[in-house]
Length: 230
View 1: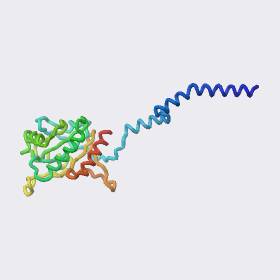
View 2: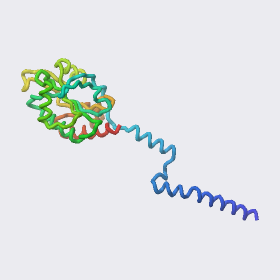
View 3: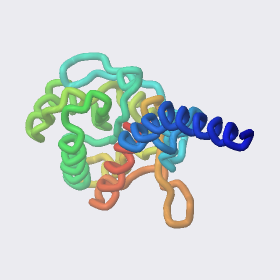
């Protein structure tokens, strides 16, 4: 008789378990959350908030205040919260600048309409590249993004930003075509104003991206997407 009561008790427990928990298990199977719990959910959420892009922090971008093609004062704070690419160029450059500008156009089109992305092009020949000249230059290139600023200012100030701030060489040289020479590299800056880069095959940071090479243009676009998701 006692055995029968035990069996009855166990059966009731199983029945209650089935009524209460089985429907919940079925629901979690249907919505794909059967393996989730509070701790697993917490880990999953934490991973989504702390994405490791694998991109190295090189250092902060320099502070600056310059004038854009529309006569507006633009500072580095203008790009706070935005991933952006920085280059140095001049509108009358007969060599590398046209290639850099065309490659930057590819980047512009890839991220067109994204309010969290921008481009900064700083002239190293401000005496020629006035606000009006830069406005025409942007028009001739076919620039349509409101987040692409062409900046001008005082030459010594700009050279200090390039050579000491970004460590991207810029200088005047009357012996070369165009009278100026500069680095053909792009700097990639994250939303917090840090210069970032990927690593090379040996695990060393590349620091900057070659604005003349299609492969580097593809690489920087891939890394822009990573930073936009940080």
